[in-house]
Amino acid sequence: MIEFKNVSKTYDNGVKALENINLTINEGEFVAIIGLSGAGKSTLLRLINKLIESTGGEVFFDGISVTKATGRDLISIRRQIGMIFQGFNIVKRMSVLSNVLSGRVAYNPTWKTILGLFPEEDKQIAYRALKRVDILEKVHNRASDLSGGQQQRVAIARALAQEPKIMLADEPVASLDPITTVQVMDYLKKINVEDGITTVSNLHHVDLALKYATRVVGIKEGKVVYDVQMVDIKKEKFYEDLEIVYGRPVHHDEVLGDK
Ligand SMILES: Nc1ncnc2c1ncn2[C@@H]1O[C@H](COP(=O)(O)OP(=O)(O)OP(=O)(O)O)[C@@H](O)[C@H]1O
Ligand SMILES: [Mg+2]
Image (cartoon, rainbow, N blue to C red; front, side, top):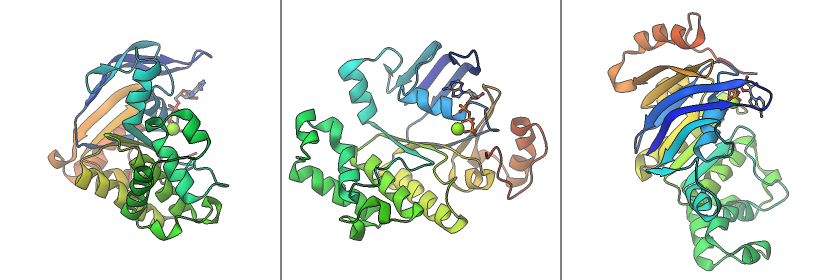
């Protein structure tokens, strides 16, 4: 579903963020990407929908080269990839509905979007997406009136309204309290399991990786140093292994690499 072939990324300032990444993510997986701050996790995620360009190798989505895609082809790829961020990236002065409808933008002509003319069908999709994350009652609220956890659920609904095949999440719960964290992760997991949406999430909290991921990929200094299917590994061994990723022993309950 997602394939990295010898992918490298060196930023303009000379920082080698990723070096020669080879990684295949299969349909339906829930992959947690872990690693210290600066390891290259966000870079990896952003290469999947070409928010940034690689400086070597090639990324494929469903067999199509993302690296080479431009124009309409790139729009079509991006439409199939939902993305959520630590800072939610929703437009606070807009209503919840408008935020979620913006997930439909790629399906409609630009001029209609600018005028806010969304087909009734799109509105139904938006309502369904909001219902999915149990926040439909807020549909006409301004996004700024919502709590952090609610805003992240709106961001998930917006991604869902895209009807994506995969969901990318860059530290989706790093700004949330522990209880809200579990709620948001539970929604991501539900969507992964029930809709079969392949999910790739960067996580600072290894306990969350353990609880939610089917596979954990560890990045260290721009390289994949760890890759394990969670069904194959016992909890204790997992914690032991984390030294490979973090360069020191890791204890339960630690939040790693957080800024
Ligand atoms: N736009 C950029 N220009 C230059 N260097 C960058 C840029 N973005 C990231 N880097 C550098 O690339 C490396 C990898 O960054 P990246 O954001 O991928 O790390 P990360 O694993 O997501 O870290 P964190 O856990 O702090 O989010 C770091 O050294 C970072 O400083
Ligand atoms: Mg990051």
